[in-house]
Each structure stands twice: as C-alpha cells, then as structure tokens.
Image (cartoon, rainbow, N blue to C red; front, side, top):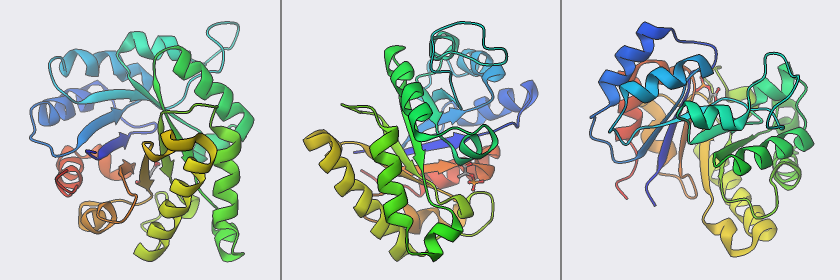
Length: 243
Ligand code: PEP
C-alpha cells in the first residue's frame, strides 16, 4: 500500500501561505499519497487551488454532532463541504488543551464517518508513561476506547513527548509500537485491522523520514512543523518507500 504523508498545519497559515504551498505541491511527483490539514478557514481556498491534483485535504478536528448551538465548533459535514476528505481527531493538543477523552474522540470519529470523512485518530503516550513502562498499555487502551466498531480509517502513533520537540523514539521503539498497534487493531477489528494505515508522528523531518518510514508497520507520517515548508514536506514524501 502507498504510504500517506499528512501535514498538520495546526494554527498556522494565512491565505498567501496556502496559495504558495498549493502551487508547490499541486503537480509534484510523489511516491506517497499526500494530505494537507490546514486551519479550517483555508480548506476551501486550498480545494480551489488544488483542483485536479491528487493532493487531499483534511480538517484538524470536528464536533461530534451534525449541527447545533456549539459556538466556535465545526461539523464534519462542514469540513466535507469545504473540500476535506479526512479529519485528524484526538490529537494530543486537543486531548490536553480541550479535555478530549477517548469517548469524545470516538463520538467525533462516528460523526466524521457519517459525513463521509476518513478519521485519522491520534494515540500516543506521555514521557512519564513511557518511562514507567506503560507506553504500549496506554496506546492499546486509547485504541480500544477511541475507535468505533468497524473502524476503517487511519491511526497515527504520536508520542506526546516527540511532538514539536525535535526528539523521536528510537527506531526499535517505533517499530515495536507499530507492531503492537497492528496486533491490537487485528484483535479489535478482525482482518480489517490489517488494512488500517498506521502513521508515525512526532518531529518527522527530511533528515529522519527515510529511516522512520522504512520501519515495519509504518504506513506514512503525520507531520507538524516540517509540513509548513512545501520543500520539507515534499522531501519527506519523497523519502517514502516506493510501494
Ligand atoms: C503533530 O503535531 O502532529 C506533529 C507530529 O508535530 P511535529 O511534526 O511538529 O512534531
């Protein structure tokens, strides 16, 4: 399966950034599927700028309900209408900043699927949990409680301590966690669990992408900071194994 290289712009990016980025990636040769998750305000502009391009668009969050009195929130259908095909859910910044727990993430995933979006569900341990030897247990529990039955989306393993820190787990630790996640997905979802892409996220850069993307059960990357540069994003994508 081709790998998926997804960029999470977080709360970065203005109109001019979107136009420049879209022009740079629109026709770029890529050996992986490319996905940009800009702020929701830019999805519509990106969609117009990327018309005819294989590059996909995603949101960074959605509400669990289709509509209602929820000031500041955005529904999955709104994201889809703007041009998104995917939505990141349960990112550690949402779990920490907005108190999102596994049950909320699961409800959001159900809403995303109902609106025709592919959810990318983020899981990952804190540094204290890793040091206590609990990393796999924590991640298995997040998977069990965040993924709806019959889940056919994407999982992103993002150790919280690796996000934006410039630090990554060892290659052995990434491989071990991805192998554990695959086993958990198959136990949870049956054979379909074998088809779920498992992305690695946390300080992926052009310099470490090749080694990380070549590890067993790594099906792509969720890239934060480095995805703000089209040059770096494309360099990461070109490091994906040719599938
Ligand atoms: C992220 O926020 O999903 C992420 C992986 O960030 P960074 O690449 O900057 O560590």
